[in-house]
Length: 260
Ligand SMILES: *[C@@H]1O[C@H](CO)[C@@H](O)[C@H](O)[C@H]1NC(C)=O
Ligand SMILES: *[C@@H]1O[C@H](CO)[C@@H](O)[C@H](O)[C@H]1NC(C)=O
Ligand SMILES: *[C@@H]1O[C@H](CO)[C@@H](O)[C@H](O)[C@H]1NC(C)=O
Image (cartoon, rainbow, N blue to C red; front, side, top):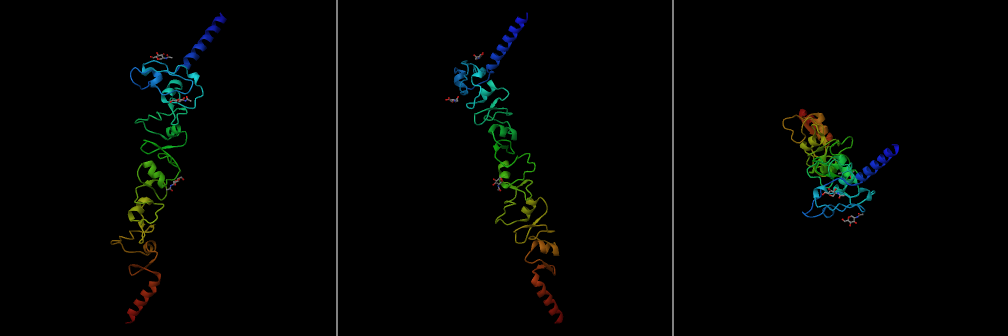
C-alpha cells in the first residue's frame, strides 16, 4: 500500500515536472503554412519551438533545455517558458515582469517602473507616458529633485524651462535660471517666479517692486520702487527716480530758485 502511494507520488512529481518544462502555448506571427519554429523568434540556444503550423498555439518543446539564458529572449519565448516574467527586456537578454511588452508597447502607457525594468537601468516615463527618457528624476513624481531646463524639455516633449525655484516647468521665453543675454520682461518675471515680479528698468533682473518698472502707467514712483527698479537712479526726488549725486544738484537748484 505504502509503496503504491510512493510510486504514485513519484509518478505525479515526474509528470508535473515534465509538464512544467514544456512551454505554454503562445501566438507567433508568420505566413500561413509556416511552422512555429520558422515563425517564432529564435529562442535561446538549447530550446526549440514545436513544429506545429497552428501559429496561435506555438510551444517551446522543453524549457529546461535553456535554463540560464542570457540572449535571444522574446515576448513569445518569455510567455511560453517564464510566465511570471512574460516580456523580454530591450536587450533581449532577460525575461522581465513589466506591466506591458517592452518592445511592442502599442498604446499602453509607459510608467517609471516599466521604463527601468525594460531598459535594465534607471529611466523615466515622459509626461505623455509615450516613451522612456534619461532624466535626473521622475517626470511625474518629482519629489525633492529640482527641475532643470533639460529635464523640463525632455519630460514635456517641447521647450519649457525650470522655474526660478526649480519646483516646476514653465513656458517662459528663455531660461529662468541661465538667462544669459535675453532681457527680462514683466511677463517672464511673473512666469519664472510664480508670483508678481517685474523686470528691472535695465531688464537684467526681476524685482519685487509694487508695479512695473518699465510700463509705469499712472503709478507714482515710491522710494522703495526707485531702489528696486533703478540701481543707477535709486533716490526719489520730486516724483522721479534720480541718481544719488543728483540729489545735491536738485537741492541746489531749488535753493537757487528760492534765492532768485
Ligand atoms: C540567437 O538567434 C540567432 C538567430 O536570430 C542565432 O543565430 C543564434 O545562434 C542565437 N543565439 C543563441 C545564444 O541562442
Ligand atoms: C505543438 O503544437 C500543437 C498545436 O498545434 C500542440 O497541440 C502541441 O502540444 C505542441 N507542442 C508540442 C511539444 O508538440
Ligand atoms: C540638468 O541636470 C543634468 C544632471 O545633473 C545635467 O546633465 C544637465 O546638463 C542639466 N541641464 C541644465 C540645463 O543645467
